[in-house]
Amino acid sequence: MGQLYQRGRIYWVKYYFDGRPVRESTGCERETDARRFMRTREGAVAAGAPIPPRLDRILYDELAADLVAFYETTGKRRLEEVEDRLVYLTAFFRGRRAVSIGPALVTAYVVARKAQPTQFKTPPANRTINLELGLLKRMFRLAYKHGKLLRVPPIEMLQDAAPREGFFEEHQYQAVRRLLPEDLQAAIAIMHTYGWRKSEVVTLERRQLDLKAGTIRLEPGTTKNREGRLVYLTPQLLAQLAAQVERIRGLERKLGRIAPALFPRMTGRRAGSHGAGSAGAGRPRARTPACPGGSCTTSAGPRCVTSNAAASRARWRSSSRAIRPRACTGATRSSATPTCARPRAGSRVTHRTGTFPGTVAPA
Image (tube, rainbow, N blue to C red; front, top):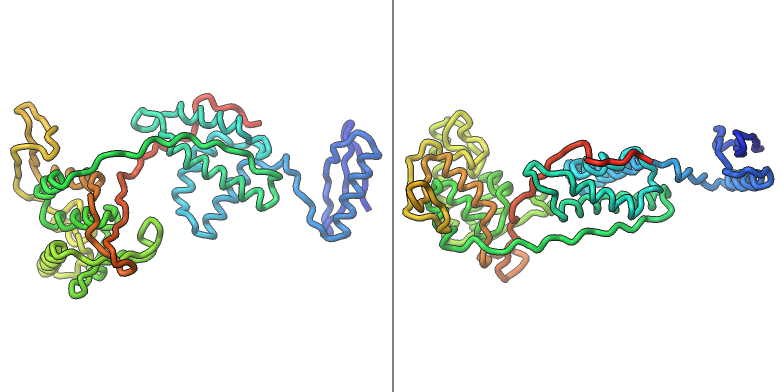
């Protein structure tokens, strides 16, 4: 049996669900309306129906926690990426009621987000904000599925910038490649031929290379889409990687231990460990009469100089982002025609901060 009582002018109801008392505001000032509300709740309890939550009490913080738990349990997205995106959303929406978040408030978030400069002192790109808005939309859809929202508010996405244009032409690629140590030449050739990411190439191990079959593979779970890849090596790459294996064997004899990495550090205290970007330390200087792109200048005139191994490694880091193959020369087992993955044009760097300029107090 339920019980009615007043708090000020509003009637409240007390009833029992699963042996526990539940107190809830009816939102009514008239006793007849409050009794009708109480009978509805008593009927739901008697029928075993779930008691709907008070939607006006659910905060953004609860929805964000549900989203993190969803990705943590399903593994459909990297949790680190989700948490990085939520930093900006939480800084603005923390403490707000979920039902109060609509198009107007989302627009206010976009305005505040654009006023927050990145570490490069520039506003964040529309693509960056769209990724955050997409996460907010996913959060609302999940809350609707869990019965914590009656509807999903519409969220307008921003206009993405035009895709980057231009290619690292073959003669430019060859000019940069000639300046790199031999082990890095093999690594950058894999990226240029198959469009693989630098993070995928520098972490390769010798067990992933099969010189007899002429293949190299990426293990499932190590790629962006978590799918494995296997490609057939071109004759040029096969010869370069065979020479690389011989260099590693020489390094192992020198160190007296096994070096499993395909592109290990060749010198220094960490010789033999993963990290091709540090290979070739102590190599002599190398000069070319002109820059591959024709735009490098110094006080002495146009010149492209690698003063030491550090400069070579700098070229390795920058060129690995810029290289895009004009044509694909590798073929996968699943297709008889040459295919390759589209290379990444460079990872985006974001600046994390906890506050927004002009943030409004939570509703």
